[in-house]
Length: 118
Image (tube, rainbow, N blue to C red; front, side, top):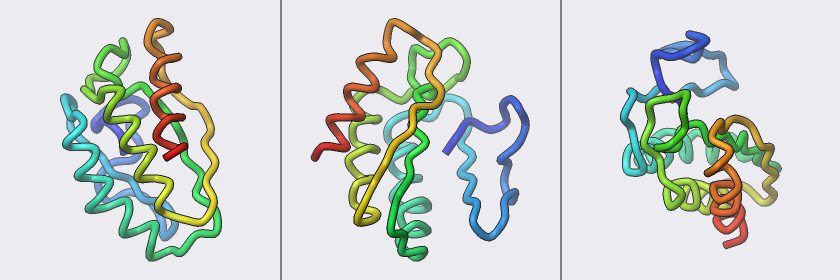
């Protein structure tokens, strides 16, 4: 799930292969938009794949205060996305990716960790 259109211009509607799922969202999307996309698009696709391991690319540049993107996800939204991710497979790992506001990044990582711990 990511802002579209946005740099680098990849991941648009209809792009991707048999194992790539792009979920482009318009600028201004927030918690409700992300959670709906997760429930309606991401979760069914992952469950159909029946993974033994779910690897989360934990980026926080969709946060409302992030200086690069134009999204509106809150700490609560990241916490809930993390929690829902734990239900997608028997094992889960997360890798820190984007997030460009050093003032909010530690608390956002903490919120996600709380969600992963549920």
